[in-house]
Image 1: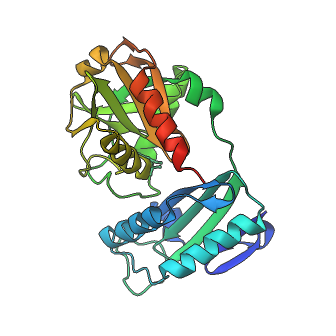
Image 2: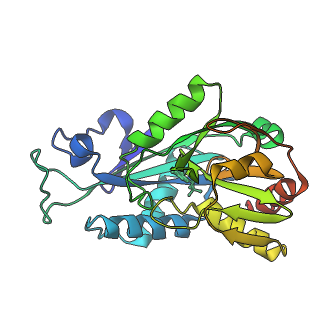
Amino acid sequence: KYVLIDQDIVPKEKAGIDFDDRGYHFGDGIYEVIRIYNGKPFTINQHLDRLYESAKKLDIPLSTTRETFTELINELIIKNTIETGIVYIQLTRGLQPRNHLYQREISPVLTGFAENLERKDELLANGVDLWLTKDIRWLRCDIKTINLLGNIMAKREAADHNCHEAIMHRDGTVTEGSSSNLFLIKDSTLYTHPATNFILNGITRQVVIKLAKEAGLHVVEEAFPTDVLAIADEAFITSTTMEVTPVRSITGDVSATLEIGPITRQLQEAFKQLLP
Ligand code: PLP
């Protein structure tokens, strides 16, 4: 297995992480997960745009060019002979003896890996069960930070209730999943939380909104309360690894049983058409 560290791709055994890495002490860093289909990175430019945005929002100086990132990502894919999988890219603020106050002069530490991951055919076909719980995260969920404690706690809670994914609400307003965005459909209109500081603006979310509009569907980017989940016609979650995955039930702070409906199927199919 080959991994990326700084600008080098090396065998994993040869790559070491420094004790003073701020990612390690504070979760002070950002990341991206990019899908690989047919040996090619999917929507790589949108992911790199978001990586630069996250860096900017956190005042992390990022001088690596888009061309260099693209080359490194392609090299990771080739060296690891990945056909269907993911590339993970992480950037921490850099090395500094532990101190809350960061220095602007330090250089970020870039790491990454690639691994095989098949498309989730069974889940794409049959849907998933969701667990609705409180959103306990901070107020900058728009930044794709490696600091994911609120997300991983929700995910564990969902798994402990035999659910595949957690979806979250802030005081009764539905936000998003622990690692996905949520859409619901009512009377042929799609509803999803707007891209504010309360959610991560998923790349798959953006692709699906575009596909839906191209198909002539009405898309409303407005926050909705939890009780609407119980009267939805259809619902699905989106993410880089889950694509457009239907929802078949929601338990936890609400209780809903859903049909996997025609609009979800239509969008799944439209998404599939984009794959290389
Ligand atoms: N929301 C959160 C909190 C996430 O962590 C993710 C992906 O990991 C998403 C949404 C979906 O984003 P994308 O479609 O870019 O993978």
